[in-house]
Image 1 (spheres, rainbow, N blue to C red):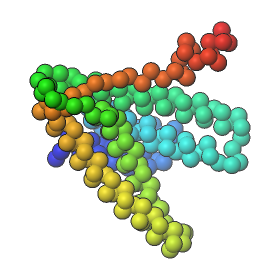
Image 2 (cartoon, helix red, strand yellow; image 1 turned 90 degrees about the vertical axis):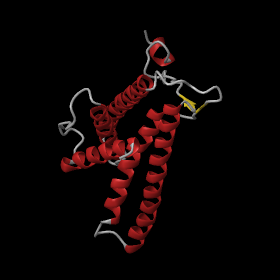
Image 3 (cartoon, rainbow, N blue to C red; image 1 turned 180 degrees about the horizontal axis):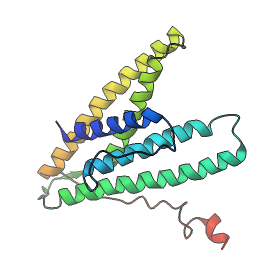
Length: 201
């Protein structure tokens, strides 16, 4: 099994586990040992799954404004957690390939392996939910056909992304590409860089 396929399998398992209860506040038991890379992958997808459904809830046209604001704050915290976890992936890969001799003509990729895995985690959720739409018995045939066509595209995208991630990792391991990690440095969460926050001090 390739590295990227293994990551996808963990994401897919976490997505399926979340939907056993399908509740944003449900507790979960990570099946992978703490400290293993798969443990972090599972946690990342669980955060993504919860946030996916928070984004659904906040779009309820009848939602109470006070509840909506609380949800927005929760989504903001979730986004920060997601970013922090992706940066854990970057640290993992940077350490893993720290001793690789980089070729003189090596090039950099547009994104790190970690941010490609972030997209793969979201893709696992998209595929799950599009499969649910295809399986609906209360929807029109036109809706199901439209969703089935979208699902076909998502499945093709999954294979392309897995292949691209594996190729990137192989290239990094061989020194054909090199990693350069830029931390996100989100400014709006920082009371020292968000002018609304530091002006209120």
